Image (cartoon, rainbow, N blue to C red; front, side, top):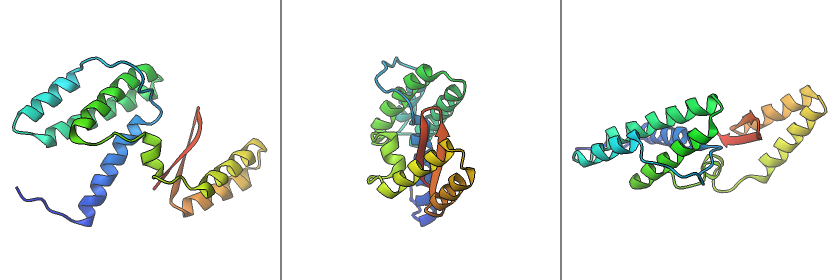
Length: 157
């Protein structure tokens, strides 16, 4: 069937890929994974005349489950599913970069990292005005900050 190419479709695909990588962020990929219901359903979809829309929908279902587990602080279970997600993505030729590398871009901007350090220092000094100023400066550069238990991470908007 025809494929409609447009910048809007390309942006939607980019955002979808970003959602999958965001689910993978912070997971340990050195855990052993076992065969899962997701894997069986993925294989069935691909064996059904390469039903990639259904297979890709399963990847997003898996990402949703990973995010649910991460929110409930079950990182080991999320990591097992994350390993499965990467393995299934590999079949389609996606999700093989490190999540941080993908989300931050190929070249991590030294200026962004310096600003994040300055913001973190301002927060440590309880200088909230300065911290907010730096955050606004980063937002103007289309940088989204995500503060978590492991520290501050960032990605391009």
